[in-house]
Image (cartoon, rainbow, N blue to C red):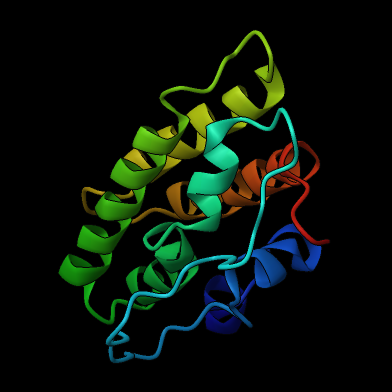
Length: 152
């Protein structure tokens, strides 16, 4: 059951391509020396909202699956919550200029993800809160891909 809690395919492989992650992991890892970015050579299509380029250059959004895995496994809850708070702050800043009138489904998915991330910042981690984060990441990425034209 721990494997199911820790490793989960997110957004049918889109998150893997977008974020360069192969799977969630509960193993402690050494943070990289240089922060990775989601899609370094991404060029947003004409008319795409600024959130597209922001996510492509994101450093903390990448960390959500690994931090959730560590939190679920109890590896280092304080560090994991700190990283999830950083991801939430980064995402909140990225979607602040998103027009709900132009992209209502993307805005709704972003709001759901922000709320779900807020729900895991305080102990205890419940199954419902863990599932809400993973599901909302999947939904956000699913809504983001067609708007931003990320590789599928």
